[in-house]
Image 1: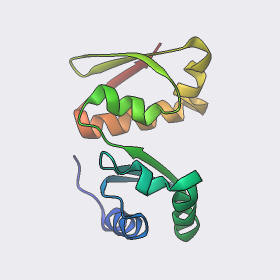
Image 2: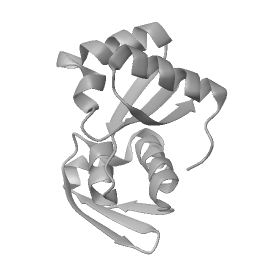
Image 3: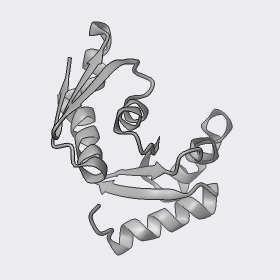
Image 4: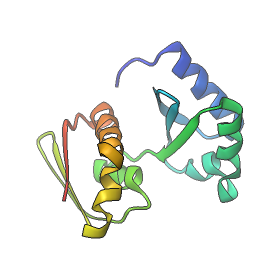
Length: 135
């Protein structure tokens, strides 16, 4: 995993303080902050009906994305794509193939490929997966 910037560490500390969820990773991009929380901490981070994450979003003034970490790369990618139903994940070398229902493929890729690029970046940081294909 790469080194975190002072700004990212500051956001992680604030997020942990506000949510009591343990943060494993933080990624800053433009006006977005992505937090990866420890396994079992997603409920603390989101709160009932998203109340806590909404409070954090208002305090930080940025778009917040929160995902639950899993040491299993197949489960982790499912967490990153939730609520999209992932039917199958195969990993060979540093390549991952994700099979979803055809009607959900566009959502899995995201507008202009943004969603899948973010998923790829996170998977590369945590598992060394350099290529992802959605089918």
